[in-house]
Image (cartoon, rainbow, N blue to C red; front, side, top):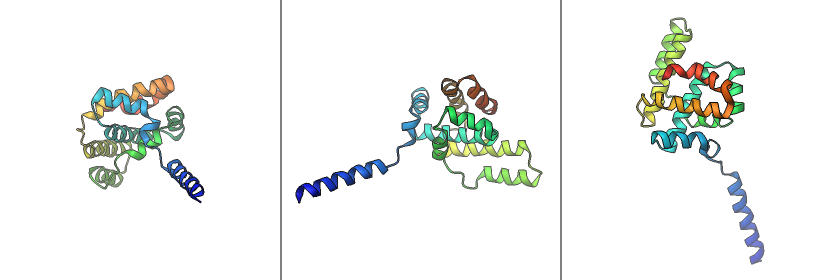
Length: 161
């Protein structure tokens, strides 16, 4: 009876371990490692900040171009999920004002930039860190997906430097 109980407990622990979600940084350790070592930020700040920037890029890119990014950098969605959630602050207000004034890319971009600043602030990072994260993410994108992916992301993130 003791042996059966031991086997059941071992199986239960194995199943619980298999069902535990893997942290984002396990899939994106290269990028997170680059950010933490070069900028002296925590893993959480690196994940959240890169996720906020990649989420901003996702909003600016076409579906086809974004698909190229995620093909080269499969951790992108997980990082975006780790970004701080926007809760109706300045970014939301800018987005609402933009839609009232006819929308357009400038309003969308302003709301996106305000959202980035809010995300970085909620991570305990100054908004000037956006410009420090950006070239590291672009370098990582180039190593992961070549010039094509780097150019796609660079097209939307270069203005943040």
